Length: 210
Image 1 (cartoon, rainbow, N blue to C red):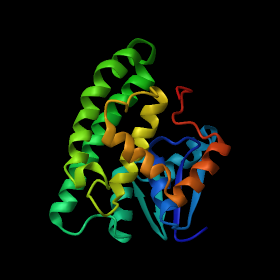
Image 2 (image 1 turned 120 degrees about the vertical axis):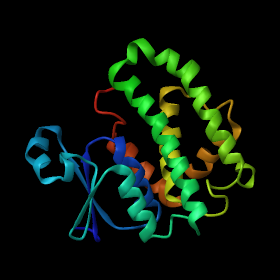
Image 3 (image 1 turned 90 degrees about the vertical axis):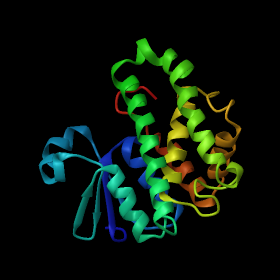
Image 4 (image 1 turned 120 degrees about the horizontal axis):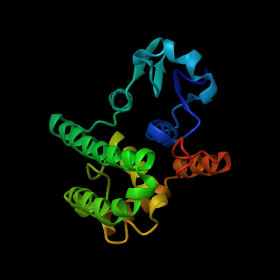
């Protein structure tokens, strides 16, 4: 195993990508254990709740993507400075998860019927909320908490990234979010990882949509 962490997930970005981004950006060694769908029935019984992503931290097994991110945030100083910061980050994270749930519903169940409506109506309404929140700290010119990066920055970055695959122009009306995504894009460790990911041609979802 590389380092103390082993991250198990399918050969897609999905719910594990935010964790891969965090670990790579901070140069934290880990084993990226990517499971083929054909092998999943054998692995599933060994997982808490029978699901992935799963993070092994030495001999501790953690599932649920939010629990994984918060675990890493606590261990690597990515959870703000005080209780108010942590509550704000939890709120922001849960808001992104609400948007992602709508995205997943559309991608996996209603793609042909609902994609246009999602892009035209759902996205502008949801992104406006995050634009406003982001601008509340340093006028949106820093990270979610302002000066210091947090675990939720990787969740937001990944969400904005996959939404731009869905609609390349979706951030044009939200300058703070667009500039934020561009700033995250040029972080040196992320650039290195993104080049590797591009070569690996890792899809976003498991059904061929993106």
